[in-house]
Image (cartoon, rainbow, N blue to C red; front, side, top):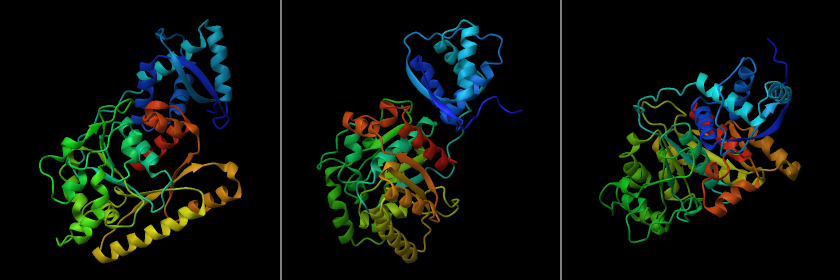
Length: 383
């Protein structure tokens, strides 16, 4: 049966909905691997066929925006008028009906093979590794995935952008655990990231000011293979606690990056592509030059240690088609690579505002276009 509207011709719609209903919608859509706009479209389509629906409490509503097919939007407004319902009430009933008919999937058991490991890296700074890795981690946690986000960059941008304080140089840190200079449980360093629909499923391992020393100390160690295995030796103890471990790497080609790449390798008995490297880039030439250097490092490491380090794909970040030929032709170049483009994150103000306010993007502006793009990338990675 053909729908009486075009699913490709959508327009923005805004309603006022209670926070609890908005949150339940976002979490359920993430659990089921759907875009929010598709979930709402399904709910409205079904609601139009109902003769009646219980009233939904919409008191204390806050602004909620999504996109509906143009024809369906008109049908919703017409039905609201004929049923003598406010537009906000009609939208709320549609969403409530969708939630009631699409229950949350039963949580599955912990992964037998431990956490999937996602390393976000690119030798070039300024491409948005931090914002992309943080956003994908938040989106995975929204989907119900227990996620650990690691600030592996000594500059500590991730830690500070999320509103946390870097660990002091004389305290325990990831670097000290990697070098065998710390005792006790590394879990004591984890802090919960709060403020969004990912609460209680997302943790941060903050950066420490001593991380600048890690490369030099790894270079001078005499321990066999500690240069490559140091990160894995620490994190292997906690992998059973998580579904995903996301590592935000420094813009470096040193030993620190070697340890992260080794951690992203395909392990014995693990399906290729379950873990690996995600490369944030921009639609300009210097990102390509930086990736060439990173690709050489990966090739050398794989050849030396007989490893497979999958590149899961690229994320084209801060994209703005208004930059013309430079942006569009560069995007085409990334899309022609052997590895897939997992998503395109637009250049918009919401991410900069979230950084300024030191809040996670998916908590500060959960319905913005950037947040939706990051959720789409996370769904593609999760599979």
